[in-house]
Image (cartoon, rainbow, N blue to C red; front, side, top):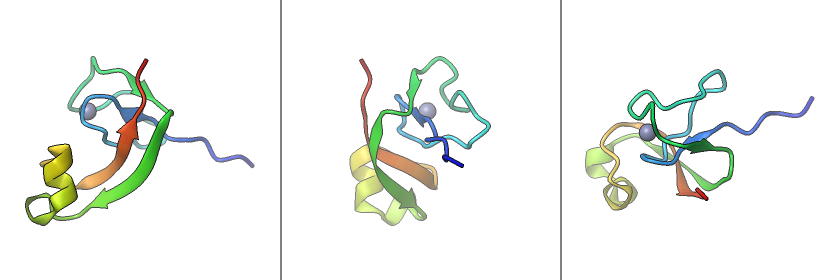
Length: 68
Ligand SMILES: [Zn+2]
């Protein structure tokens, strides 16, 4: 059984849950399965990656999201 690639929000790079099709924080943002670099942010306030990606909430994120 092939596992579906989850979608990532083009706005905040958050990787959505399997049953989600839009980002909770960005309902209007374009979401795509064309992303790379899975990163788990546990402590946004203490993470350099989170700072770089401007992430303020803990969760799973994509480093790069390709939006046409
Ligand atoms: Zn978002």
